[in-house]
Amino acid sequence: MIVGRKAYFLFIIIFILAALVGCSPQGTEKIESGKDITMFVATDIHYLDKKLSDYGEAFEVYAASGDGKQINYVEEIVDAFSRDIKKAKPDILIISGDLTNNGEKENHLMLAKKLTNIEKTGTRVFVIPGNHDIQNPWARGFKGSNQYKVGTVDKDDFYKIYNKFGYDEAISMDESTLSYLAAPSEDVWLLMLDTNQYEYNEFIGMPATNGIIRSETLEWIRQCSELAKANNAQIITVMHHNLMDHSDLLSEGYTLDNSKEAIETLKSSGMNLVLSGHIHIQDIQINNEGVSPIYDISTSALSIYPQQYGVLKFLPAEGIKYSTSLVDVEGWAKEKEIGDKNMLNFKAYSKNHFAKASYNKAYDELKKMDGYSEGERKLMAETMSILNTNYFAGTVASVRNDVIHSPGYKLWSDAKPPFFKSYVLSMVADSYRNKTELIIPKQN
Ligand SMILES: [Fe+2]
Image (cartoon, rainbow, N blue to C red):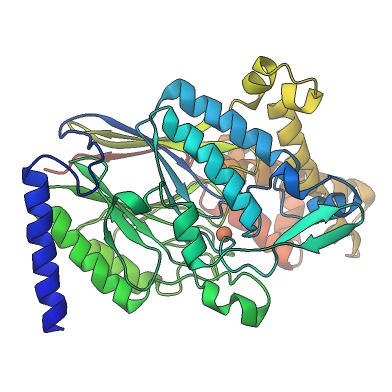
């Protein structure tokens, strides 16, 4: 304990000395104090490279049984997103986990190549793993009518593959996880947390869904906070799992298992903003208990309609502004002269794909239930479809009024309470404003 404390103070002194001579510990150029900073925030890419699929029968079955991910076009979405980044030239790109479909080594390597190309255009990339990225027993390729097992990565592989994307710039690393602290600017530091529990994956035969911040990591976070305070830097925290509940119904496995403890630690360390993913929906929550609020922005999955990412602006004189932006897949396809009509009309195609999947899920469920006419089933499925597309985009508030006065919604309200009724009502429960924008004014 005493040794740990001595090492910690020694580390602070080394870091302050490094700051005094005007360079970061790795010699990477730091954004000077007082400058505006633009960060793009993407999550849950679930990258699947064309090398691992022939898009045949096995892939079709897999894609159809999924959760609405546009897995058949994920490589194109990433390329279009890279084009957006090259055009907008944000200072920083943050990716908060689930980089790959299911932790396939090949997918990690191919995505890392694309991230290298992004860094060449001047945007610095910072990543952390998600629950699907490491030691995933589901790592698969697709050929003909077969899925075949492919290699996954362990913690060390992940560190090596993504070394250039955060780890080599870390000014501190947590000893027990792949969490790190980076200082890309003098004003804003990034606390990139690995909240996953991949060590259980092999035993349970699947990627563990739940996340946690271990007590050793919480202690390390407190030290990071002291270091940031000593250097007048504000910390933005990034993690795959959600700090707070983003749904009344779906929180188990999405929100950190020790959310209460994590909130207390972050708040008492003076942190007020977390960027997360994992649940795939666009949502913003606030915890107002105690003296200061803390926000958790869950950005929606890049692989799912409406293929959006967060744009976070740090404006020294004003504070922090977050909004969302759509990947311009259509513009990319036109520029590349791609003939695929789905690509050239991607917004409509992706919306229709997700809306149809949502409709079918509700319709199939309603077919199992007695007491509804065909017309009623269609009205209810339509309501589910409208709500779900807006729920994932964070825009339920835009359709709320129309939906709650629709005959389909009335039928859901009067329905017996199986899962789908609860899900439909939960989407409307917290929808008085859209979840795509946030302003955190500068604190004096
Ligand atoms: Fe996830």
